[in-house]
Image: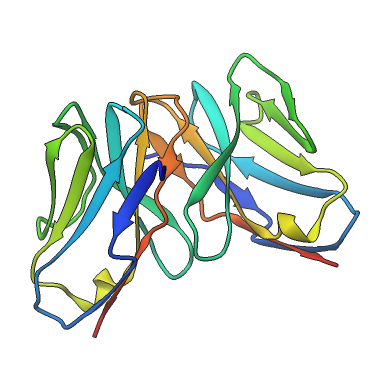
Length: 108
Length: 113
């Protein structure tokens, strides 16, 4: 079964810097979603990008999708300590598949 | 006004016991899910229910059984618990199956000793 695979597994940056996380998948998709998980909490939906879209913005978040490379990236600009969390991509082709996530640490 | 709630939040039990985790959503969603997140944070879907009908049943042991008394509830029953069942279990719901965003519960941390 297909699933998103995030890269890197862990990322540590200073507050104010940008954070980029990548996601790769194996088969064609209808859409791709990014979720955030704070420690000890459930996942929270961030953004959905459809297969016919190449870029989408939501506040400080920018998501790109390259279906030819079967990859997506999540960019968080001007990061804050509160952005510290794990970020998951999920691909969907009739059902949802999550990767293992990227653990982002933003140091104040 | 919690959207997706789970009980209990923590569950510690011994091998061989039978336990249940409850999930309720007040969003009016048609589809509910159970996920297992292991110690490496890998999130794996276990089941989904759409209008009380099981539509995804991943290769999980038959010791795990989802039960949906109505559209707003999807409980997870686990029989003969094993050490490897220790994980965090998340319930989620979505408007429909497919490319709709999912709303997750806070998780239930199950520890089997």
